[in-house]
Image (cartoon, rainbow, N blue to C red; front, side, top):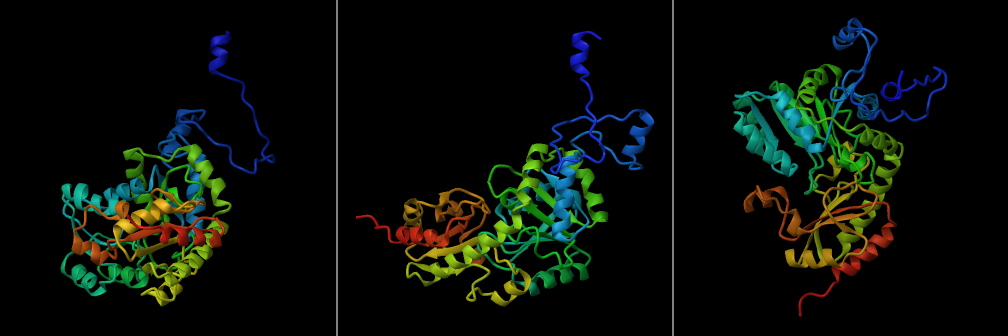
Length: 391
């Protein structure tokens, strides 16, 4: 063969079967081949293992999916390019024109916007309720056939806790699928509840470094099998490099989550005692309105704290600007601490009454606690809370 041909057909390197790498190599590859057309067809029919096109599956991505499913206590998982991408593809896979979806006012803003906007435009109706309104959920489900009950616990940014057992029971009694956005609770919690599908933004806790984006839907094999074709057709797979970084990050996931939870609880106690703060919300606090439910459902209470600066939105802005150890940026779960001030936290799709119902006030601030020493974080917060006002 001439050089031009040899460059397109490089020598193969065989790795002995008993000589495995500890970390699965990154398969930064789009196309896969088998020795015959017949074997390729058998693989596409599911009669033998194999890979064909990385939009459909990739070894590194598949390892991530299986690892996440195992953590959540389920059989299978399908991943996507971002958390909201996982949510939107899932809802498109589960619903058709004429279907009805129930969701809750305190949930993730882009989820609300997708359901009330794009999904409604495709003929899917919806009902939005407060997360604690179980009687409203019961009457809604009894009055109208519902395909999906979509909820979040704890909610972000308000930090409310859903009664998972009650919501899933009501959904199943009325023939609806229960879908839980479990991002804030992490991959290891809530698996004991009969949730049909869990959704996660992998962008938060999978690496903790804030360096890659991804989403996941986790459930039993039969239901994942029904939604996977939509994910493949819409064509927004997670990248193999991102999957590899997430697999590396998962090795320290439980250590990070538990350390951040403990630090967050210490910081929450500090804020609760500070005269400039009110309505401190963290699932680990005894003062949380649903403290007993939070303890029963979620042994590790997470890293997110929501509180209100008593002096209002402008004081919240000054407080945020005065912080030195908290980056003003979206998301949570990073190893560095983050803050979202009132000016960036208020939802644009809710009116004033709905904002109040959701638990967001004029001076509401959200903190994500990282792996810094909590005493250093408390000192930084104390300085910022005492920042002088204008004049």
